[in-house]
Length: 489
View (cartoon, rainbow, N blue to C red):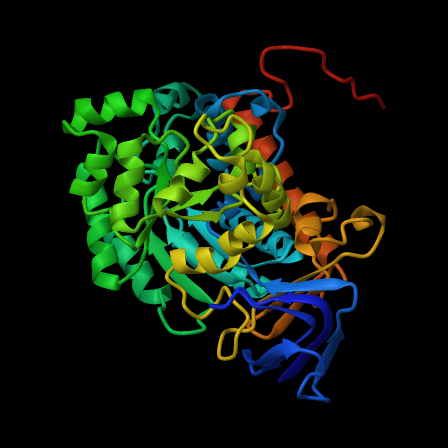
């Protein structure tokens, strides 16, 4: 199929030369970019032609960290005002009630929300796997394929729970906790079978896989080593959460005799195949080690303020040479799933509480810095050389945003800055994945958004009802009291 995008106000290639074209065009054939430039397009006819006056065209955005399954447990009042440990305690009873149909509904609605906001490739750190069910990965891959997003699944696991949460949950959930932890299953052989089935390093692949537990498993050091071995054997990535707070640093020394960064190193985790989520509490030694080993970091700005984390040292990371990408993170620790929404927050958040030695003129992100983080750098972090820029021979992953209307009025000096710093509407004017239009004029091309949302809402209601009955928790109550609105009628 041939497709033409033409007359874009500006077309940002994010290529090796950082080229930006006025009156930009893009010619796409069979999912691959054939030509890119400014002025009159070399093709006059195609199967589809999109005139993009009033819009800017970008490479498809790359989301480096997410948990798709969380998209049907958003904005739960019980965890509105809780820090991360109590947040997990309040949500695990909901997640313990998932069935395969719920995972499918959550994956589909999450993928659709990201497409609507310009993300064409997304990492799903999938650490909810229902013990006793068939492999849940199949359900998630099928749903992502239905949406049409480029899906990078990190086959995770919840091998351990933090800070005594398992002991707190047992009186409420009983053996249901084991359904979350997957106790009694041969985890590593299961992950290996999944890699053999779904992983692909082929150019243009729509589904790829990496591995990594939900968190660093200091209590199970062999599991970290097993993941590193799988990454070597299958040439895949390694990914997990890493922002060791004091309690985690103490636990690492107590259980392993090593500092957290040394434990990762000893386990075979520090290398170019590794990218770590959050990294909000790194010291100078850790930053230097990540830079030296070529590791990447995924920054989730909305999660930082949602769960009260410290601000990650973005300027220090980038200054040291650590590649930093943007991750939306799970919709229960974000309550949104909007890639554009997180980019707008990322543009500004790092400026708050910046280190004393931060140089505003040189260390604060420019809009183009941020665009590269969300495209080319994110793709490189996933070791993808076929996405992240608009250039001949690259996969045709494209996002376009309209700059028409009062929201952007007056921001004529830098349209990209207008998109990130002035805009409020997060919906893309056009999203194309692998040469296939998925979003046009802010709506899905061939899927029913309302039906997908209804299915997700039905799953959410079913899960909350079952969890309320089993755990005897009032998920509609705000923690710590406070005034509560009264539903009438």
